[in-house]
Picture 1 (cartoon, rainbow, N blue to C red):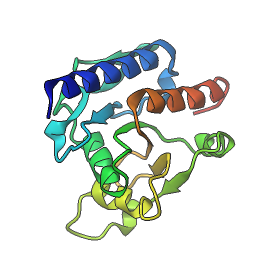
Picture 2: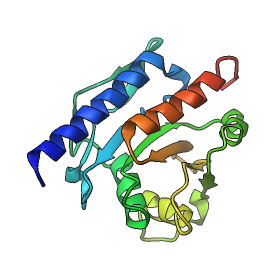
Picture 3: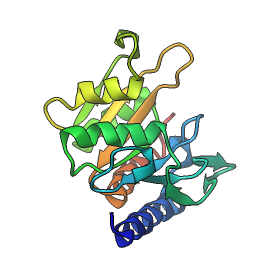
Length: 183
């Protein structure tokens, strides 16, 4: 992998993070924090996926990246994009945001392709993200994959796309719709 590819991935991801910091409604940040990732074209593992070190958190009323963007900084969201890439190698970016029933109609209004999975139906011995994301990607990778959580697991919406700026823009479209929503 050419070093310039790694540099372009980090640069584009920093651009996406800057958009989120500037314009995203902090209510979209889940309790566990959020992350946005961008994988190299031939990514095979977490070390090939750039993310925000320490995640993005809510700091008062501000969207706050805890650390810098670097490769290998995510496990959970990186697995989402690595699984999606097995079905469509063009889908190299993903982010997790807070789930709320109030957001579901807005996802439809924005004409996103949406899929969900039920964590209680997860087969034993598999990793949730691998199984859940794969179960939603059999006929193509949707824009949105969500679940309503399970015992000890926060419900979550995952936004997927070809590029982190496109993912950030989709999050901002949703963010613009929730100004008055009760999340």
